[in-house]
Image (cartoon, rainbow, N blue to C red; front, top):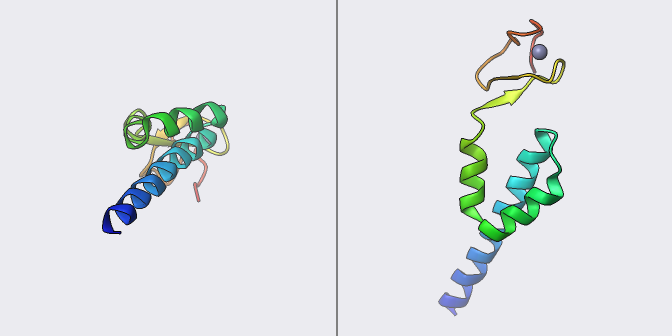
Length: 81
Ligand SMILES: [Zn+2]
């Protein structure tokens, strides 16, 4: 019973990793469906790779990659939410 719970928990975690990867990919303007497959195949590894491959965020106005701590975009000088 405990083993079954642990396995289903692991399975849910794996699915969440796939969804997380797809979500990050979508936010970066990539084809999220491809990344969802990638995330579901590699699980947490894909999530880690995705997270570490991109340390910042995208400016919603000029679409440039900026530091995730930034409050004002250095490219277009707009206030970020
Ligand atoms: Zn900007």
